[in-house]
Length: 262
Image: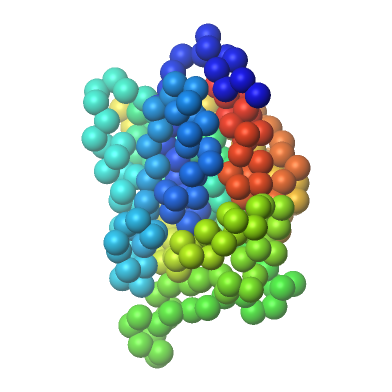
């Protein structure tokens, strides 16, 4: 592979947004590939991620959860546009950013991600965007930070299910890293709500969107991915024959598809 084979492409600023339980660390294989090709890359730790130093059980709203991404975009110099890359539930944060900063986003790439135009507001949104893991049994551990008589404050995928659901095709070393770095995620993540949204004279549908499907995905299955694509058609759909985490299982192919999407 020649990482610089498409030197004619303009150099971009990528902002990588992780999914539930993950953090900026999960991009450690993709990050050097993008930077090695001359692009600028920012990896965000959303509230509660390992690098954020925030207890996920104390995050009470989706706005608080996604604030690190909002703050990054708000601080961009005038006229600068970024390419957002969201994985899994990181798609909710990407969509939230599209509603707030469509004038600062050149393109949004959804990798096996929740891509809903109005967040989890309807029964169909929930059916399309929320993983159904019931076939695996009881896969979650809940934390009740406000007391056992109150709703849970955070959720974690039990260690014995992590490889089967998230990393089935990924290297053992990456699974070991994930078992150390994964954190519970705030229940507030599931409370995402978006308006019809416009920013700076731009609307959310004016931003180019790319969806990268993952055919062997045990978290967001192919049927859910296809349903979200039908309901809110992106500009382009690219396909990978991987598990839910291609940044581990096929980072070089993911890198090439990202370049192809530009």
